[in-house]
Length: 321
Image (tube, rainbow, N blue to C red):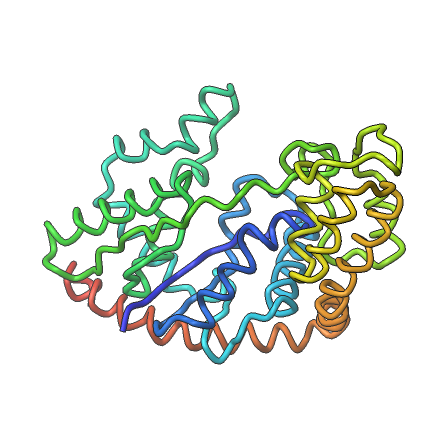
């Protein structure tokens, strides 16, 4: 049975772009595949940029509650917080000793920071080594990633091969499981939905807030009686939430003429019907976070059992057992 592992950084309030682009497909994959599945919250990776303890703590809380509210099945996936598995960090230290500096110099994140004139801390520079430890500690076979993140897994494979070349075949060499590119979800202004653009639709906004956000979706100045093209932001968002029957009715309205106010009203209803059950679960978990902490601790205990076996092999291979 193959092992699949995914990590998520606890940064920012989740929006519907996150849900359809990453959360939903990852959960469906983890719940349906016949494989060992690991999902972790990469809280120490976030320290490369986060400089406030309360911000990091809240980020972890929000992301944990989000995944559970969206349907993650913890009987099929080991769900844990990175910082609760100390074996990862021991392995990172050991891997640093076989990782060529040139490999880290070629990291896209490092090069982008340099090109942008940013100061680079060692956390960012060593990011690929810690990521390699995240992956290699669990004998991971496949790491689901987008094309922009494929290099991270390739670096991990190079580090594993470098270690095995010196100390014997100890580590499992992982492969990237490159996902099909997800269609870019447009934001309120038609550009890619992004927090940096301020055009996102929060995933767990209540209905009144959702109504205000939907009202901001940019539309053209056509009159209610004019036919409208389905190639527009509001329709792109609508089709993600609507049933086939609802979509058919909306297409007909577009072809015959409909007011944007009516479209936004119907969008609100279909969105809320999908999001309200998740919102209720999210609010419950946020208000009863002790239950989520229990889930994460139980996940960490399972993760530590696997990572401990890896560390035993690694220690023995380097003579530190």
